[in-house]
Amino acid sequence: MNSSEISFSKFSEACADDKNSETKPRAWNPLSTDSISRKYSSYASFANNKAIYPVDASSQLIENLETAHTEIRNHVLFEGFACVGARSAFNKNGYRFGLYPPMNSEPAVRSLCHDLYEFCNDFKFIGDEFVTYIAMFQEDAVETEQEFEKLMWAHLQAMHDLDSKYFNWDSRVASEPSDNNFSFSIGERGLFVVGLHPQASRLSRRFKYKTLVFNPHEQFETLRERGKFESMKKIIRARDVATQGSINPVLKNFGESSEARQYSGRAVEDDWLCPFHTHRGKKDE
Image (cartoon, rainbow, N blue to C red; front, side):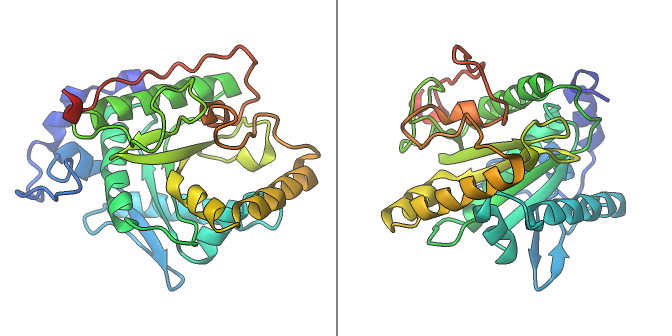
């Protein structure tokens, strides 16, 4: 099933009789009473060697989520995996994860925004520990890197379209993808996005599920202020060379080039233009 086959109205009708919806929204999550968001939310955590799943999750979702979670843990904790920040988050349980309907479908967009609001509330303050959110999507494999890139940006655009009804862009980062200080934003929280998929040319980005990893931007600034960022970057690049034989050519420090060029993992062309467009948030209207 692709995203074009999914109708928002059909999902609205399917969720209309959801009797488990809360009547009072949580202050940090404007989608907490949205029936579609809650129906497809799969916000889960891992602690004490045990996965903790959503209370209202169906047995089928939990079964699929367990499989996907085991695979992403094996992928990140594999000795050759390059990103030591992600490995640290997994080793110290500083992550949350979820499994969603097809990327760029209405339920996937709404439920992922819902779960990222929960994630941002869970990690209001970030110190030295690396934290991350992993969103995996249930759908067929893509054929090319370009196909994934197009789908990824369409999904991020749809998330922004929804998020901008409730929040402004994080003022600490730029909102235009051509700006060297750009970072994606949800819930007024800058997030560095990492895409993974089966056709990725970079081995560290190759994964069975289409996946988007969201890393709070301020943790990189905190690491930089405390003198830990450069050493982490050197380790990541050394591990990348050991695995791939080369450094990902699109990797740049924040402020040197727009990080939008790095999100999909593809070595984009010099004249590549990001298809993402920002617009005013609700508070600016």
